[in-house]
Length: 385
Image (cartoon, rainbow, N blue to C red; front, side):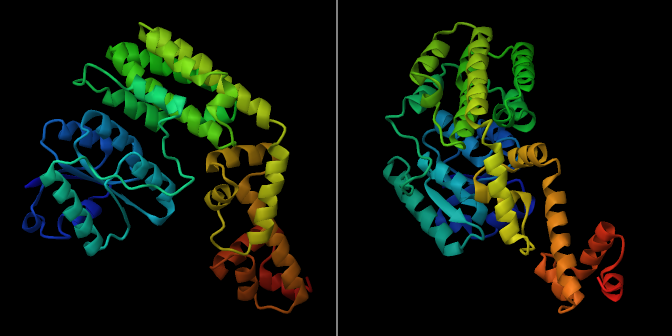
């Protein structure tokens, strides 16, 4: 039997996978399940697992981060990634890291079985997990990339028995290092590093683990953050590979954290210097997009940020700073201004106007309109606009 472990933060999804097929009929056995990656790591350490089926988006650790750890600690384990339509960028990264299969929700039985048969054949032949070649232009890691090679070197640890789950959970759930770098909030970054350093001391985490997991996590944050602006770490540092060499040479966790903090602060200052004067142009682009799509009822902070190519938190922050108004209030104001103009023509029913300015619910439209103008749409029409 091929021992299989399921990871998904939704119990109904885990039950669905378990009951999807007759696993034992095909030579597979479900030996465990977990609601998140941290729970999975703890359980897997006490089990003999051949295959992990995991969702891509989970609390604490994403499926991609979970996969990186599994590949380091248990390279012989096969992984099947399950993701939704809006998560393909994460899925491509997972595939680049060596996922054996990528299945789109809702999972089709024939696709699952096809992946399982392929994995079973590989295990029986005792061959390495088959890797899917991702599309060109994705986030795959190149062997020639000195930054990612450096990260790989930092991940080599001798002691593999005491993974600092609490620390990694804290870093992923509480510390938005990427946002602080993007906003050049140096004080917040200082506080982040103080919290991490204190946690390392309190838990007495060995330097090898600090080097492997903590520095890797933060460097990946820096790399992803600066990539959003079209830059690479090579643009910040003359020779990024030297930074990893210096960290690798550090003997204590304190030395590593001091050096890492210095480098992260440099990334934050580089982003500020490079894009500090370009917020206005970015906001103009956002306003243009809103102006062209305000009639879409699905318009949201998330959808605009995705179209522009930045995170929703970053967009929310700079929009308020540059415009003096929140994103949602700006969209509401624009929609109401158009609604007033349309009602003034007396050519459309109220429900038609509501739909034309992005409101699928006419009752809610009337509520927002009255709050904005002081009178209801009906009264506005009766008063002659």
